[in-house]
Amino acid sequence: MLTVENLEVVYNDVVLTLKGLSLCAGQGRITALLGANGAGKSTTLKAISGLLAGEDGEITDGRILYDGTAINRLPPEKIVRLGVFQVMEGRRVFEDMSVEDNLRCGGVTRPAREFRDGVERVYGYFPRLKERRQQLAGYMSGGEQQMLAIGRALMARPRLLLLDEPSLGLAPLLVEEIFDIIRRVNSEEGVTILLVEQNARAALSVADVGFIMENGRIVLEGSCAELASNPDVQEFYLGMGGGGEKRRYRDVKHYRRRKRWLG
Image 1 (cartoon, helix red, strand yellow):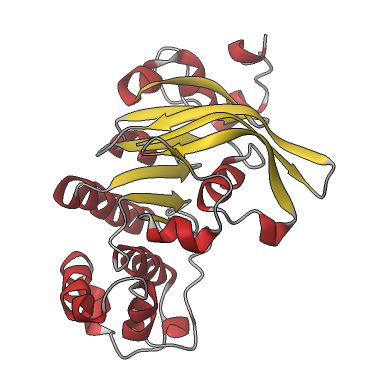
Image 2 (cartoon, one colour):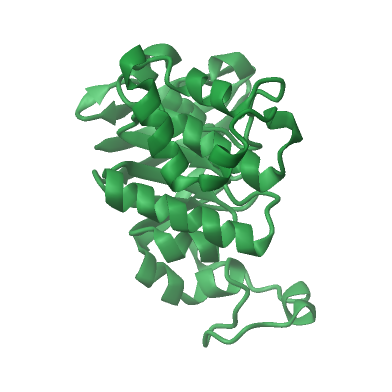
C-alpha cells in the first residue's frame, strides 16, 4: 500500500534529516518504525502526510507511493482525502472543544450522514469517551486525550493510519490498553497502520514487521519476531543482554560496544 523510496528531507535549506530512507507498509498490516530521539521517525510521517512545509522542511529527493501513485507533491488536504490520516505526537486535541466536537472535526472529510454511525463506532473502541462526550478535551487525562486523538482519526475512515508515539507520557497500564485498541482497529477495520514508537517492546508486540532507524536511515528491518530475537535490538532497544536476559542499568550505562550496523 505504502512505499517510500530513497527519501531525502531537508529543513531550512540546510539540515539533511532523512538520507535515502526506504521502507514499505503492506496493506492490512501493522508496520513499526523504531528508533531513538532524533532518528527522523516523526519527519518520515510528516513527509508521508504532507506536513513538512509548515516546519520549513521539504522533500529534496526520492518519492512516496500510495497505492502505486506518487503523493509526495500533494498538499496535506488531498492526502487526507485519499485515506491517509496522521495522529500527531503529543495528541494535539482541540482543548477548548468537547469530545464530540473534536470527533466532528475528524469526520469533516466524510458525508454528514455518516457522523452518528462514526461516533458510535469510536465509542465502541473507547467507552470512556462516550462517558465524557460533552467534556472539554483540555480537562481530560493524557490517556483519554490519546484515545480522543485516535478516535478523531478513525472518524475520517482512514485506509492508512500514521501513529506518532501513541505511548508517549502514558502509564504502563494505559499503554497496554492503547496498543490493544490499535491491534483491534487493525484486525476489525482492516486499517493499515504505520506505527512510530520509542517503546520498542510495545510496538513489536502488536506489529507484523518492523524497521529500525538511526540518523535518518533504515539500518535494520524484518519481521517483529526476527527483530525481537536480534542481539543488537535486545541490547539497545529492549534492555536485554545478548542472551535475552534483562540487564541492569549500571551494566547498560558502562556498555561501550558499537552497534553492529554502524561498523
